[in-house]
Image (tube, rainbow, N blue to C red):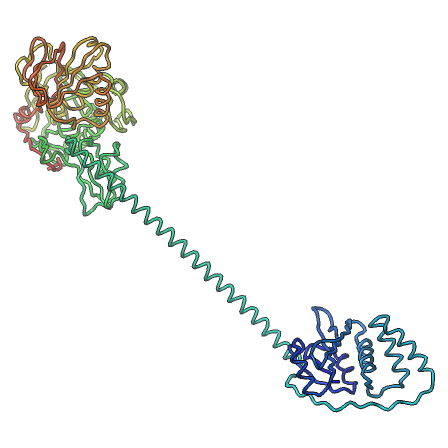
Length: 640
């Protein structure tokens, strides 16, 4: 028999007990005890039939618990096993080893008599292994009372087991424990590093996915915008609405950054469009010249110009302060190209500020009979200029050939007027976007009443002369007026444009329609293709019993605003209105109006009343007689 002791944490008591046995002992590794082939090889090498192995295992906070395991040398498999609890370890270990010695006829060093040894071993074994040890212990006790001779000691063959395994010292155990802790920490750090790497990879994949998705959506949106804008531009050209009426923006492609702020600032979101990273004028005919696009552009890429090469506009030449080619004579409002109410109002205020600066810097003897400024015209521009003159403390006079309000009072009843918020001197802000003629007249009436601005109605200006001292003498239907400066705000319509055919002076021909309900139950004809003609025809078509025909020489309605075009198409579809395109008016007859079209040839339409909405002739002759130079604009800014 050979006794193998594994290189585990055996206590000093266990090692001392093992050392007291006369049994060849060797120290082996724990891994050897788990392999039957290794046990069998040890037995063969030591030429024994039985191997008794003392194994010790410890738990955290407890001493080592020992186990004696007996292996078969032939098979290497365990045959029997006895466990030892940590408590009373020394006594129990001694008893177990004595039991092993008894089973295999072994004798410990300095052994007592056979009886006492056997009795002691029997009792201890009984305590350790249960009932089987008790019978043996009692038989041995009887034998121990007799005086027996010591038996000869059976000496086992000398066995030599050489292994390069030593019990670890405390320093080695501590080093091994530290190494285990370091290894565990390294594994944990490696695991954390792998997890961090995986998280970073997942984050990068998410960011890449988001960026890719955003780029794809942006590209898709840009393509959709481009297709939509191209379709809109194509339709605009087909409808003949690709020319702006007067003031409109042009975009510098070298400055435009494609931010779209101009699109958002315009009241009509279809006028401008952004694609290929640049703003473009998509529906020029819809532009009303508000100019908000220029004011909001962060790159200063927009310039407001008048006219185009295909649709020129005749305007007086003005400098940056809106002074004409006649020194001291200024122009504001629609006559200078600012047709929108809010634009004309704001421009008139700026011009009056320039006049105040001009008057303050002038020298010489002032005529006490001359007003500081004479405002000709009491429309939006004239009203704004007069209010500002009063606010600045200037002596002023404002005259109008009709009553104040200008062309606004000539609008048809219920006409929608587009404007924007304005700040009125001596009154305050007026917030208007889209309003009616009646609401606008009511607002201006309230402004005139509250501010006390003075307006002279029914005064027609006939001639303007500039004296040698720089004082203007203005000839009117009510006498001469002297003024140091003159501001013309008379609009562009001048006298109404006539039909130019035989019978145009018939009393049934009118050039303004203000009361549509007067024409109920009558056959009516409207000649023209602008917004005024559309609004006049629509207002008449709403009256009971009317039959309304709208005649336009063009092949399509391209000049009116989109809203008016849509309303005309709806009225035609509902049978309220007849639209005759390509109409060439030949004459006004006692029973109606004669015309010809490419499709129907010459024919006559009965008419009780004919409204010629053809616009007005600009006062070019009047301006030329004063000495103001009139220029044809084909896409240039107004200021020289």
